[in-house]
Length: 248
Image (tube, rainbow, N blue to C red; front, top):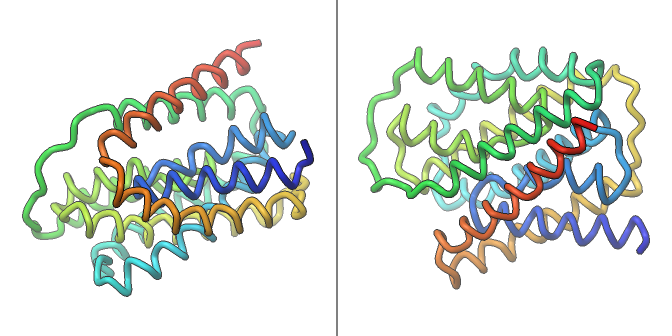
């Protein structure tokens, strides 16, 4: 199967998961780039940031037009993650591939475990707590820069539990945070020398953006918890594969 077909199929799957679940789908981008398309771990995390940025910006526009983005809260959260994202992005390209793969496997397993836990009831909005928001935002920025994932599976729970946003607003606001962190991490990686195959990245990103629209329609037809469980089980399998591969 050609690289173009694989890129289109993998991109569509990533976008579908992002659109249906509001976060977490980008965790599939890195293993797809490594195991299906032959990218090195460092190049895969950089390419994933490009794909995540394109897809998140599209989703952000959609949620903004629906009034689901809390700009002030999201700006504070995102600002705290800019420097950690840039610092982590600058060092990620210089780390051993096995270490990057193992770290990604751990984060993917954590994302799957988070999705398998039952979600709590929708909470009423609460006042923004600057210190807690800054700490959570910095941690998310570091993960985004280091591993090339958007971090929606972490941002959404943090925006709900730390800042008290309602779920719909948390999903929309998380896309602002993800976009800012991904751009910051990409800027830090601008001087690195990992080769990027744009003939693969461009169709992957395009298919991901289009898949996100279909994912939103899928979410309206299939129960959210069912989708989350299916995705989480698949993600656990990917995490196990990557951890075994890193230990060889």
